[in-house]
Image (cartoon, rainbow, N blue to C red; front, side, top):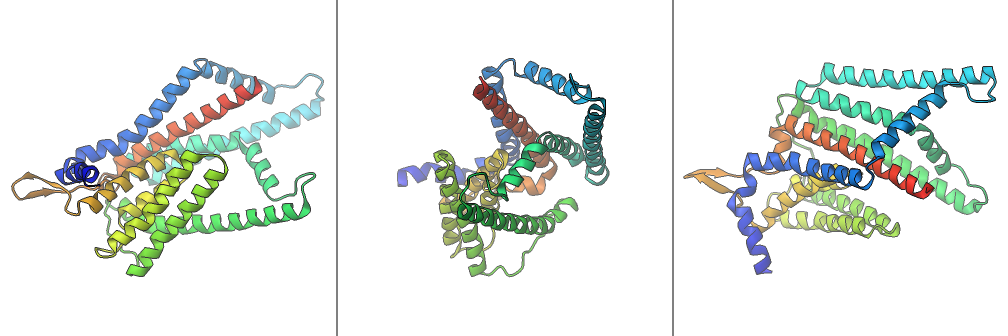
Amino acid sequence: MGSISSPISSFAKSGMWDFKTSIGSAAVGIPLAIEGACLLKNMWQKPGYLKEKLLETQQTVLESFTPKTGEETREAVLRIAKNTFIVLACLAFMGAAAYLSIQFLPASMAISTAISAIILIGKLFLNAKAYKQQIIEAFTAKPEEDPLAAKSRIHTNILKTVALVCCVAGAILIGAYVLIPLLQKFSWSVSLPFQTKLVVFFEYAALGILHAGIALSKYLKGDKAGALFHLTAAVAAIAFPVFYWNHEMRLHHSFYGLAMMALPSRTAKILGSAITFDASLYMLEPLRGGYVAPGDFVRYDFINIIVDRFPLFFKGYTAASIAENVNDNWSESTEVSKAAS
């Protein structure tokens, strides 16, 4: 154990990980590099994908806005009018999202938010039918399904929906409480109430239970790598507060990292993992950091990139998220094409 922890402890104490330039480059570079590598892999696996998508788009536009063979004039007009309304509504939502982003957000964040909103709104409209069908199937009995099994499944989905709504509402409230100071000259003067040792321990434990549940779900679906990832996070969610018990007991940046690791986003998982790793260095070297000059002690946590250089972090995060959306859409389309062939 000593031979393994000693190099990591030396690394933590050296201060190499603590410099602002290193942290900033890592926060922005790691997710972008991974998503870029995924994109290159997809392009290598399917060189004609872009041309194929353009042809598919052209064909979809022609089918959506031109009469079909044998179609009655009235039906054609109604169908084209409906499709025109959907396109205009999509463009209106995109325009509104872009305008509100540019109007109310700082210049350093506005463009990234506008681009991300446009892509997400477009994806929502393109997959609206599939999402609608999934919702209908989740809350209705399937043909030839056992009535008791259908009832149990529907009740479970209702409970999941209520829990999800509560989590989203809580995340919005907590997020607003935490993010508002960031938008006000990017200060981090946040003090959460009722943070006793026991409360903090249970907050970490709740996060651990969430990761354990996700790990079980991944395992049952055959995703062993995903199950191991979340199981590791679940163990860490208990290890951190146990370590903090005899130190400063509060929500350290390990909590934020573990929370990001639970999000359904590869980019968030990458950043969360880096933040959690950064926090774990304190367990090996509580006095981590280094001296760049006599008496000039340096200790710059990974979480500080979000605090002190939020615009840079935000642009890197949204760019990687956009690339993630492109990669995931590419992978899904490739799988569909393989299944069809």
